[in-house]
Length: 107
Image (cartoon, rainbow, N blue to C red; front, side):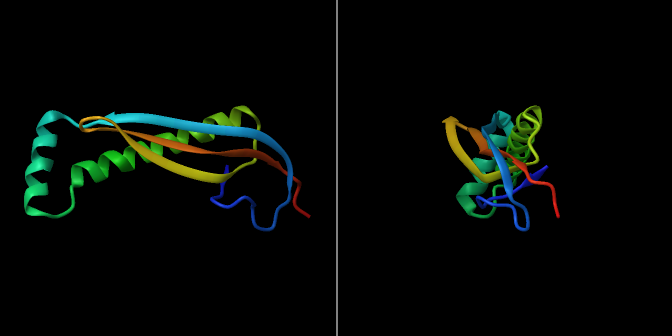
């Protein structure tokens, strides 16, 4: 599956737009790791626990978006965007979305 943050796929023409596809997930950290992150935040530095959580969430959201695009028999998803939002304390939603398309056969 080709993923593009632009509205096109370089070197390929879009034959048909199949509509919006999306994937999302909500993740939360274990309270013990959350306490460690709060303490680290006081002294500065990267909050590895949250970096890891968001990386996992991003990958899962993209995978779910791709699954939906495959169910439409898409060749690519264009205009891919990622959005994150806090849902509750120490939890976050990651949303991946874009437009599923069929591509014309290469020359």
